[in-house]
Image (cartoon, rainbow, N blue to C red):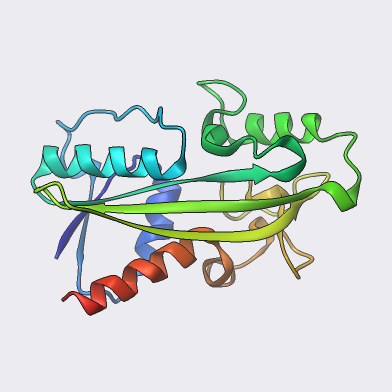
Length: 196
């Protein structure tokens, strides 16, 4: 099966390719289809955004498309940054600016109230309009300063439950085994194996 990854995020592409390695699929990226549009992520939920992206790219390429929408939900902040995770500090924000804003917003929050979770929705859309969704999440807490150099996004701030290292301090295979994206992709893997 040919699958186009509906993202231009290089780190996300690397992570998805690493986790689905060994599946009977051929992975393409948007670099292989330069005519495809930028899909605006304006949905109210991760699922809406993932379904919208996957559907648009499947239509554009004529191949199955896989889109991921994921982000961080901080409980004491009513689930923010949520679907705005990538643009939390503004449209042109990068990971560093987003992390700085989150730390600033949480500067007065005590350790016991720093609970959060990473959420991922993966949508697999076929060119005929059929869409399947797969979910994963991981509970944890937000640290008070960035730690580690691996990963991307909020990884340097996020301590998964039961661990004293952030995602950014973990090796790729450790993070993949615990992460929201890893869990959602394993659901996808089960689906693909059952529907060969």
